[in-house]
Every structure is written in C-alpha cells, then in structure tokens.
Length: 335
Image (cartoon, rainbow, N blue to C red; front, side):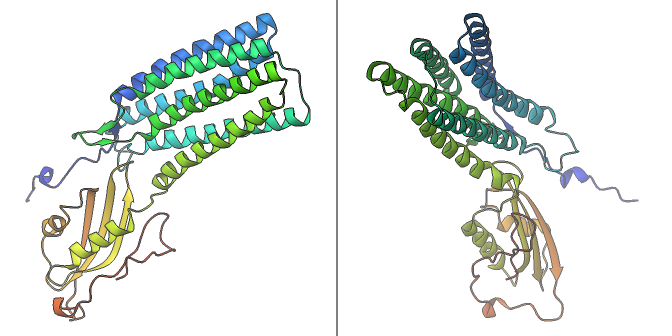
C-alpha cells in the first residue's frame, strides 16, 4: 500500500501572537496597582475616609482587567499547539482586549451614574483627603503608563518578526490612561472647588471623564468585535484576490470566504471553476503576493460542459458582492 509522506502537505496552524515584554510589563503594573489598592482600602477603613475607600475599590476594577490581560497571554501561549483549537489560540488576546473593553465601559457607566447622583444630591467633599488620593492615583497611573508603553510595545508572531498592535496590551494601557485621566480631572475639580467654591464642578468632571472613557472603550470594541465575529478582509483585498485568480486561463471563483484566524492573520476558502484544472500549488502561487493570507484552502471544480467562460469573453472582475445570508463576517462571491 502506498504511504506518502504527509509532512510535505501539512503545515502549522499556530497563529498565536507572542508578546513576552507586554506580559511582563502588565504583571508589574498589576502588582503596583494591587498594592496601591490594598493600601488605600486599609487606610480608608482606618481613618474613616470615604475618598480613600472609593478610589481603592475603583482600582480593584483595573486589577481585574489586568488579570484578564495576563490570563489571555498565558492561556494563548500554553494552548498554542492544542489540536482542540482548529486555528490555534490567535484570537485569545483579541478576546482579552474585548473583555477589558467591556470592563472599561462598565467603569465609565458607574462613574456617570455616581456623578449624576452627586449633581442631584450634593454631598460634602473632604477636599484635602480627596486631593491627596487623586494625586496618589495620578502618580501610580503615570508610572504604570510608562511601564506599559516601554520600548518593545509591539507583539510578534511565531516564526516571523512582523510587528503588530497588541489588542490585549492596548486594553491594559487604556485602563491606565482612563484612571490617570479621571485623576487629573478630579484634581482640577477639587482644587477649583476648594479655592473657588465650585463644588458642582467635581461631578461634572466625572461625567466628562465617563464620556471620554466610553469613547475609548467603544474604539477598542470596534477593533476587537469584528475579529471575534470572523469579519472578512477589506473589500479592495477581496477584489485583488478575485482578480489574481480569474486573470489566468479560464478560472472563475464560485465561492470565496476570507476571515481572521488571529488579530493579523487571515484564512481563505476559495472554490474555483475551470475547464483546465491545475494542481493546488498553481492556484496558491497566484496568491503569493497576498501576504495577509496565512491559510488557503482551494476547491477545484472541473467544468466539462463548456459553460466556463473563455478568457477572451470574460468581463473584468467586478466588485465582490456581500451575501447577507452567509455566516457572520464571511463573504460569498457569486461572480
């Protein structure tokens, strides 16, 4: 019985993004934030300061977000070669970024609700304590921002040195920026309230901060959500794939699906109809310049009834049409 060496046709499906520097820096920020959180909660309980307690519990939400970030890094790395994941764990960091964005939106909502309550029912402000807490929070977050920014703030793929933005690290960075921004707004409002008597400015600044943070969270959700829903590649690239395939012999694309298998890798399933079938390698070679495609599956359908269009009769490839009935994020080209 003939037993071919299948290794010649097999390839790696690990599209995991590795960012060890990002993981290490996030861990340092987690430790710094957790220590500050514990100190503020203990001091608030010891001295009866609601300002310290509130900021301490607020920091706990960021500790949770940093834990999500680190968990995503480690889970993706540990299960990178697990066959249970058809295309590896490349989307785990994206999922971590999405979860952190949701947490950021929840923090913004809590800030807005609390600020509105304080506008409706003003409460006494202990300015000296509150200013001290805000300054402490700003200092911690500035230090955390420098740690997360670092010099090596891009991830790289297994087996290559292409640099990409890391959604997981971006989420952690936005949490730090959000906290630093709210601390800065609080300092401005509290100093103004203490020396000019504008106490109402404090909750107003809280609403401003909530709106800005909501916008950041929405931006991150827009970046990560489509990837998790298998959104297709940009339409100009789809058109390029179609043109490259149909430009040779009498190839016609009957079905085309392109989707993300990680933050920066795409997979494609292409169904080709032709009267002159070639080997699979021939069709893949037509797409060698489409570097976005990390995994390509070609289906070759031989047309023997003369219905395939000769190259001279073919019209220029038109725009790729969206099939709304297709799976989420996938595109069908019935051209």
